[in-house]
Each structure stands twice: as C-alpha cells, then as structure tokens.
Image (cartoon, rainbow, N blue to C red):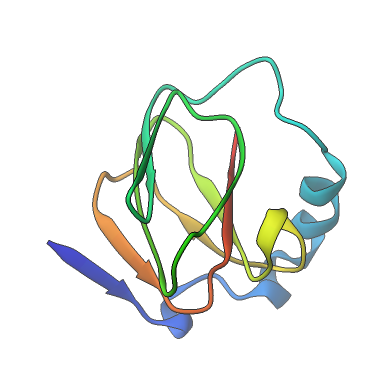
Amino acid sequence: MIKRVPLAGLVLAATVLPLAAPAAAAGPATAQAARGVLWVNDQRYVDPAGCYNATQFPLTASNATDTEALIYDELHCEGLVIGKLPPDGQRHVVEFGKSIRIY
C-alpha cells in the first residue's frame, strides 16, 4: 500500500527549524546505525546510518527501522527538514523530499 503524505501532513520546516542546523552539522554517520531496513525509492538499506539521496522524484520511502528519519528538501541532507518519516514500515510518498537522514 502506498501512503501519500501531503506536505500539510508533514511537520513543516518552520516547526523543526532548530533541528535543521544540528542535523546538517552532524556530518558523517555515527558509529551506531538504526536497526532494520530503510527503503529510499527502490534502494534497500539494512541497518542504515547517514544520509540517503532520492534517485527519482517524488521520493518514496519506507522506514522499517527502530528510529525516526528526517526528510530534507535538498540532496545530501542539506536545506530544510520538511518532515519526519516514522518507523512504521509503511510506504510514504513525499513530493518535495530529496534526501533522508537516519541515525
């Protein structure tokens, strides 16, 4: 099942703006990874950690890990955080998402 996430249904960047700078400044992935599987478009990542760019648009993602992921409006997890991807295992479509960061 595809769950389309309207931009209004996401946590808007203005709400999470304080998170954007620390997340972008965090740099490379940490030693600990999320447990589970993250799908970004058609790519599968087991125990992901770090930033993953969308390869096609709109971004589709499924987060079956133990950690919430952040969705950015620019590639390489730059720009603003425009939403959060819950660890619910459902497929989400994010029209303006360009990359996802997970720890």
